Image (tube, rainbow, N blue to C red; front, side, top):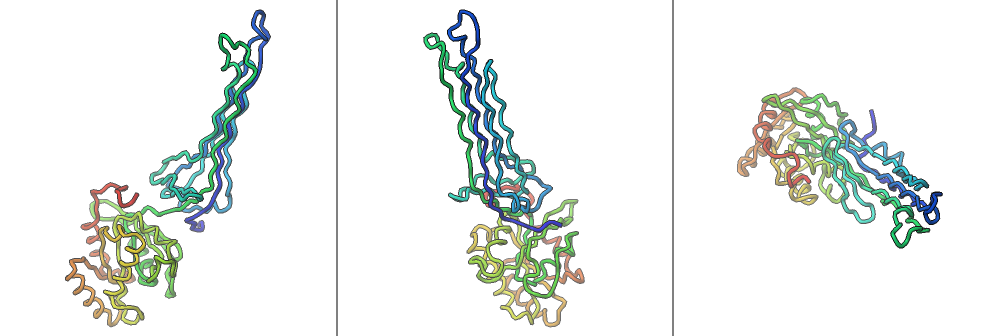
Length: 344
């Protein structure tokens, strides 16, 4: 099992173009034999390609430099130099490529096999045969090859999931995703059990399926870097539907159920306002615990006043899971395209 790495810094350089050649052939009655210098080959590009077979950027933690091949120089007898070999860098679907210097987004690869040319190879220089004219029949000059582009890049992986599970640490996200999918995230009773996002495919009614993302716990101040902070908040950006998991355990030492939801919602708004506008469902967890009915009643009463849907569950004993799947299927925006404006 590979380590989950969702950010990496690398340097890329495209190949330089080959120089044009200065050459003259030996031919009777032709000044200086006639120019026959060939063009230089073009430098190779640096190309990024998305692959659904990858789910981490770990390869780019150990290899930081990628250099494409330069084009060959032109030769006599009008021989053009070979083009340089391009470098193809394979990254997971959902990888965003930023210029480290300007922070401009150069590419956002959201589909399997999608490609983007990030650094273009230098143009091959023209040989002296290209500069022959009626009045200049023996040019003694040629063009040098152009330099290839080079960049320092930051690669950022944003998971592509349909449903994002948002909640405090130990609220039951990992337990839920393991109960409704084949994903097996680590489950324990200490804070921040989930240190990396996990994906699980969940079968839905109508022979459909959705990808669920178990996002590491969000706490108050996460948008400022508290807890696990911004590193994992960005994985919520591409999800189309949110599950706000609210802990109904009366002894969890946290705020009321309503305040817990409001804190989570506020953190998302302060991180990126449009995320909070996506369809969502409130999910009360651990309803089987003694005293949980008090928080459940509080959450249901408040949500009814706000017009928000609520489902309460106990994932370890699978209570309420059938109702949860049904509620998600009824509210999920099936008709929207995968790449709507809010997720670009």
